[in-house]
Image (tube, rainbow, N blue to C red; front, side):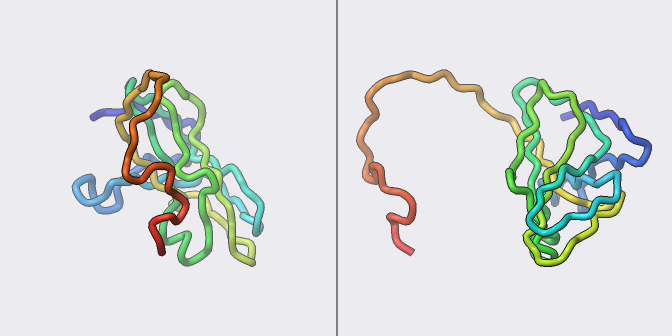
Amino acid sequence: MRVRIQRIHPRAVLPAYAHGPKEDAGLDLCAVADTTLEPGVPVLVPTGLTVELPPGYEAQVRPRSGLALKHAITIPNGPGTIDPSYRGEIRVILLNLGREPYTVHAGDRIAQMIVARYEAVEWEETELSESNRGAGGFGSSGR
């Protein structure tokens, strides 16, 4: 599938698969500006990119596991959704859960993006059928 993309910043890096599309599900997104993440303060980090997704597709923005493990950097709304009608800059909300400030440098990989098909739904308001599980949730199946 081909997706239209535009660089709106001269330092923008096109999203790329680190090991190729046959081995990676997510494309790496990179920052275009140096940004310091203070502990506990969400920051909107620009990528310098805009996209035009085909109808019926979304882009999901997810945390990078290495940043989470090594530096406690996450995406508080992850996965974030980019709708097919959105034409603004892709920006990633990063949150430092660590104790020390962390600096993101221009060109650093800050998130992963997965483009996925979705189905639109129409609600049918009615009584629901019974199931074995019922309303059990939130740990009801045990540890």
